[in-house]
Length: 147
Ligand SMILES: Nc1ncnc2c1ncn2[C@@H]1O[C@H](COP(=O)(O)OP(=O)(O)OP(=O)(O)O)[C@@H](O)[C@H]1O
Ligand SMILES: [Mg+2]
Image (cartoon, rainbow, N blue to C red; front, side, top):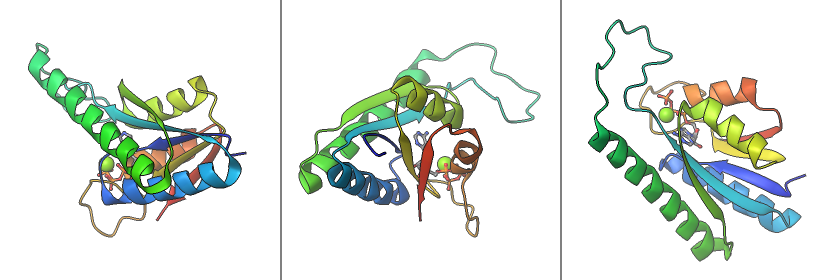
């Protein structure tokens, strides 16, 4: 267990706390650390009930979201290198976050996913955000949800 760890990050303070736990587990158990950020397909309105769908793709938006996710992953990799001396493998994927996190964990043959209980969302009072809630039910491996 904890030989191949996937940390899911969104740039939030919760995700950085999750990185602390993931790095600690990697160090303690001699595991590899993979860090993933998922950005949404900008025209995807899956999981909403919107009747309006963009009629055309706006490539600049996609490029910007991709660049932001890359930055989030780069900062996370720097963080674990600077604080724990760990060289993590960084990944950026596009898609629906929860499903994409679980698919990446399966594809990378991870035995565990580490993520924050909450993220960038500002719905105070919630115990879990929607991404951590969905990953909890979809994950096929051990899930560590960090508070
Ligand atoms: N796009 C993403 N890519 C990778 N990991 C993510 C992404 N979004 C969230 N996470 C992970 O899930 C954790 C919980 O975030 P989540 O989005 O569920 O909570 P929230 O932002 O507070 O709520 P919501 O997004 O539903 O408003 C984060 O700390 C992070 O570890
Ligand atoms: Mg969120």
